[in-house]
Length: 368
Image 1: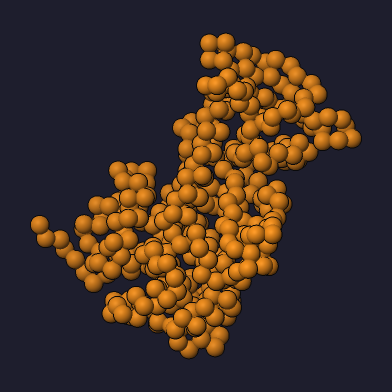
Image 2 (image 1 turned 30 degrees about the vertical axis):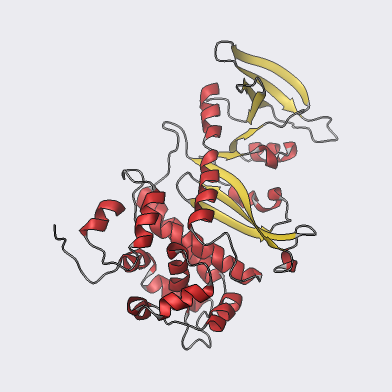
């Protein structure tokens, strides 16, 4: 069977999402090409995207591939390893950050709100992952006596990340997520690592809905049973959390839902939502697992497990280009209607990145 083809590569099809005036304006905004006659910002961006999707293990491998491939040399001005390393260290990472958020906005306009649970508001899942490296490689990112790390706090809607904060690994999780709690029409989901009763009150007072896990041995000042379902082993109560007014006490009342695992251990959920069923609240929290799958996917499938530069600028460029690569794949694959997972689509793209984009790939991309 023959397919109608053109001169566009699969790689070209991906990067055309960030072509045109937007890219020029963004590069100009941050003087990205100041004193850059050869390895310009566009080549830097495209080579980093290629590295992430192709799975190159080092800058040396990347420069070898780009310099020895005619198709890539038409797209990328190939630098030396030292040029590449230098630009990772000093080209403004905000170019890459702005491109990531441009693609997020594009996805929102193109696909609309993501609904993980039918009939319920959109979910905003908040969590963080830390990328660890040896202390001697990045002493400015020290976590303890043996290792350093960078923390990526993420707000994930079930299909793609909407908000990213990158901080030193030692920074407390709670200190880098406040700007993720702004949407009063969504349900925010986070694990018990973020617990803070006074913070729960601030969220509630600001009209932010949330579901989280209760911590073990939590102090409950006041409890009123709302309902119990003995057959399903699910119970709910209205509670005031904390110890004393001078301590970590909530002034608002919360809903505590308790169920049990197969070993008889209690699983407790805390929420300020009173108009959903017990089962719906539990279902909402189960979807928190989606962000764990995203973290696992991006570490395993994009170049984010090992740093290729160790100052904060280089690390941010690497993280944001990994996220850009994810968004490019997402925008070119309608996961809601496609029979293929993003993992399979990524593998197909990876081995065909420099092949012609034709009807064969339309079947996988399902862009409609």
